[in-house]
Amino acid sequence: MRTQETDPSVQADSDTGSQEHADQVLLATGPEKMSFFFKYLLAFTPIILVFICILARFVLDIGISTFSTVAENAISNPTAGSAGGTALVTPALMSGLGPAITGLSPAVSYGTNVAILMIAPVGIFIIIAVIGWSMRVAEVWSGVTLTLASSGIVGLLIVLMTGGAIPGQERVIVYLKWIAFLVQPFSVVATIISLVWLEKFRQSIQYTLTEAGVTVRGGVWQIQQHVFPYSDIGSVVMEQNFLGTRYNFGTVIPVSNSRWGEETSLRGIGAGGQKGSIGGGVMFAKGRQESSRSPLDCLYGIPDPEKARKILIRYISRNAETGAEQVSYLKKIYENERAGVMTGTDPSAGSIPDLLKKMAGLRDAGIITEEEFETKKTELLKRI
Image 1 (cartoon, rainbow, N blue to C red):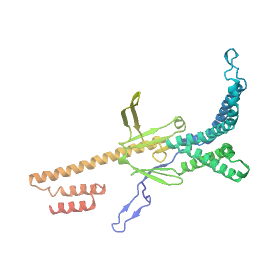
Image 2 (cartoon, rainbow, N blue to C red):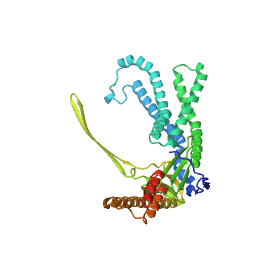
Image 3 (cartoon, rainbow, N blue to C red):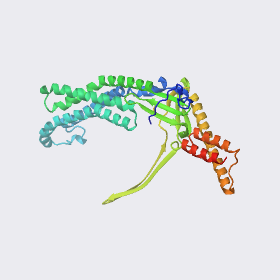
């Protein structure tokens, strides 16, 4: 929710001569740099994936090479490994399969190379990008996606510019090899971009605690601003990891009454089958709804979180007490008026000024409108 910022200066009202002061700022802070430590580590995901891809390529190459060697030995020496030297494959059968195997070998080699290059790095990068996006971890999927997209685009341009000298079938392998090569430099570039973006994002976040509520503002490409009135906050949660306890920073989460601690359970029974078989199953899932730990949804990684927690608790309690007093005032006025109607008497002239003061207090607190106050004021003055 976007709100208009209030000028902290004193504003004069020319009609009434009264002065209004803006809400006093109780605390203005932002996330500590150390609180983004693990986010900075996640920004190195593209570089880590490059090493994983290199290891995967090494393992896959060894596996394919071993399999090819075993297959060639079995073809060239049919009697090897057979009991009593008996040939597992007769020479006549080998003479018939020989041309077919020779013709199939290039296709198998081509498909194997494509499969390996599609797994590492393309497949690995895509899987991690999808996992990061589904878990809403921007530090993971943004850098990984940028690395793979940049490598794919540049590799395609290189293949298109040199395509005349490459046979049509080999262009796919050449393109995948270029991607496998380009992810190495582009992973470093993507990591640097992610780190710079994270730091700018951290610096843009501002947390302001006033007498009215909590304001959260921040963003790099798109500015967001959220306001949490104290009346909507039911509890306050403070969290500190081992770095936070050491360097005195932590996350303070203003939680509404309806969000924290709720559990959602799903149960189901299913059955299915086909000719000759039947099956069934029971499903149970249980989830817990908790408040977001996003830096734009709470007071994330702020210094001296205990100070912010105490301010929140104090004003939440004060807001609750004010609400209780206002309800009590309304109840007393209603009971007095009802008693006057039941007995046929009006409030005494001496009690009317007190009622007017209470009504003015309700108006200033926003419980009743100015029109309602004037109407009630006119009605009470007529009774004097």
